[in-house]
Image 1: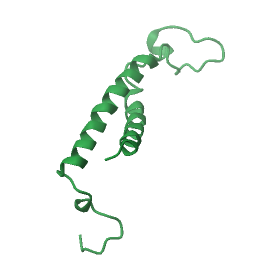
Image 2 (image 1 turned 120 degrees about the vertical axis):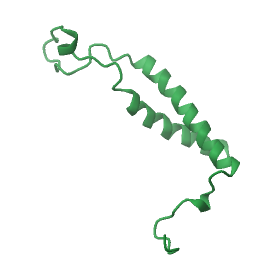
Image 3 (image 1 turned 180 degrees about the vertical axis):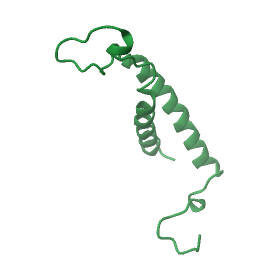
Image 4 (image 1 turned 30 degrees about the vertical axis):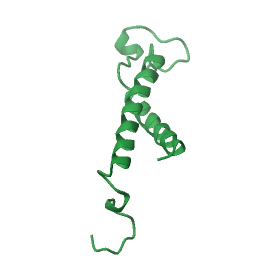
Length: 91
């Protein structure tokens, strides 16, 4: 597996993990008990904590990418084992 494929897998895994991690620890103005500034939605997060979430996303995406690369290079799962769309093998 070349470096371009690994980077593409990491890129996709990073974004998927980011959207999975974003809701954790979010408190809006109602939950925090503070009044929102004029023009701000009451459901907007008080402190989004994006840097820790991006760090957690990077670590999780690295683990997911390592797992996918391991499965692809070790032969545990081969491309031939995956079902392909419009395949006429009967399954």
